Image: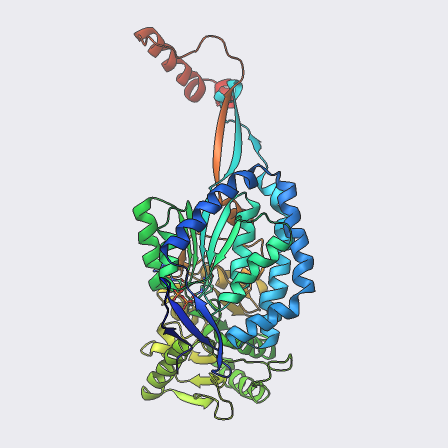
Length: 513
Ligand code: NAD
């Protein structure tokens, strides 16, 4: 039984029946926005954007401030919706969808004005005498925002707040399996005072997403798989519009001989199983140096005895359901490939026989290697794959031997060594003595390398990425133009002398230059 299936409809839209990944019972029907709906939404957005961009940034920021209180007040309703659609553990819903969203709203409310206010920048050299340079952060217009199912509320909210505070309108679409969690972003921001039309979260599937990407928007912010990311990049290239692509990962964890092993074992569990392992920066490969491998594995297995999986979805459970049967197929295929190639499965390695619905047991696998799918591709499941390595050099070489480069983590008591190893990781970001955290730290620019993405989101850079940084050069003095036509030999000679003065001959010239 699939998580969603098309159903007959009498109108011109695709209708899908959605099921709960926990009970597999129907939880709702999704009517997908078609091309006409998307075109209408983009037209509404374009109209709304002009007035919104004229609203002072401080006023725009107040919407985010009010949204903080609304998210806090409605946290149970938000978590209920997210858990109903995803089956994630309630504690994951709280940390990832509530805490992160509130933190991000606060951050952008506080910093939007300073990130986006026009700036004067000194013009270098001799031109600085006569010219003034101002930089303006102009909204791009209408942004298309496409997001996946693993963080259905946070991934819409976090990008939408940056784009709208920067003065854009947004036409967004969450995943077809988590549409109502995504829709909550619009409800909350509108209730916080965002004018209608500035953020529209459409319901729909890949075809709806494709219609947004090709519908005449001014930028696309995409989060999802590598395969869809490529299609989005091609569509944007054809229209010559910018995009950011936040794609998949296959993150490595390196455990050094001097690591705090107890903390590292906790970090391995959390990094691999948070959000049922459906975390783009989830730990997928764990490299442990020989000297501490046995003790690390012992600790991991000991802690594994206490990892709880259940169908109540109260705060006392650790690992929730797999959110989508499509992902379950990938998880099972990767584990079976590893098993058939000689990996040892210490715990888990199967669906939870005590629970109906899409539950995969928390799993620990060793004797793994790069000839196995589970080490080369994104598995996105609650699985710890642990490999023994001779030393840190081998760990680093294997960590970087991947087509992905999203995040990673290094564990050592020597922080400087941790910093050096982290810097040598070929990834968008890295943590020392913690699981991957950078998406949850708004000031950290976030984005992958290699197949993990293009461009960066979040922080000052991410917010400004929703604007055009427009330089305006103003002449200070007026009067006759120095370089007015007609050109002649004398004026060329004058220019040559000026260049000699500035860059060749005199200390005064070099100072001015
Ligand atoms: P997906 O690519 O299948 O879908 C993502 C979104 O794109 C969905 O809303 C989908 O409906 C839409 N879509 C599908 N086809 C489209 C098309 N042709 N044009 C436009 N939109 C289209 O990905 P998914 O399975 O939903 O998400 C899981 C992936 O997302 C994983 O690989 C995960 O690592 C990645 N992810 C990355 C980050 C990050 O920040 N790097 C964060 C979360 C998830």
